[in-house]
Length: 298
Image 1 (cartoon, rainbow, N blue to C red):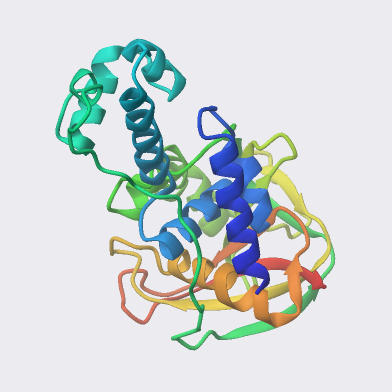
Image 2 (cartoon, one colour):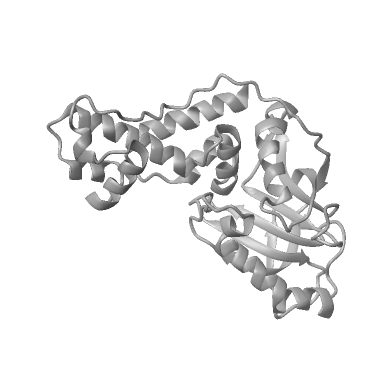
């Protein structure tokens, strides 16, 4: 299975670079997604976040090295990404129940978090409504911000906390001027994109977010114009209130990359995605939103 092979490649990459401060965007490219999507997919498939997996593996390998003797604790701490013996000792004790110095003694009990291997069968357990759309260049107006090499805080419990500064950008848009200008002054919200959020991952790994509406060709001095290249799009429908710990689109996106894409005959064609929020009560369990993924035939 293509997806399973790609996830095996991910683990291979992580293990080969386990002592390095590598860029998650480089890992995410193996699964043909961005770092934020990768974090969601990894947690869905593995059961823990990528951050937790890295921490457990590094502390397991650190314990093995300490058991071999003739190595300084500070050298092991620095090798596995800890800037001080104190922070390393805290993390080490939390996992192993003893200090790094105690781990140097033969006979002590240590925990080993093994390298992940895959012997699973991925199977869709929920219906996925989708359609295929052909679109030329999509022109939008709204607000645009480059978030740099952003990654989600997957340790947080609520999707707004995971989004961090990107949610603050959305929150500012929704509660202040730009949304009101688009909705009330220019009345730009309309089918098929209504209120849309466009995420573009640049070649250098930077995440650029654009929020707004489809451009009608008028003069909008308060707003910024943006474009999305022409593409074939797979459009998926998500249902559910936005007032819950997991955003409906988050769970759906994970399912798209782990189940739909590997079996559909399509692959992602470029580093864009569009989220579409139509009219309705976003606090309702029946609220409908969409995720647009650019695709091409394999």
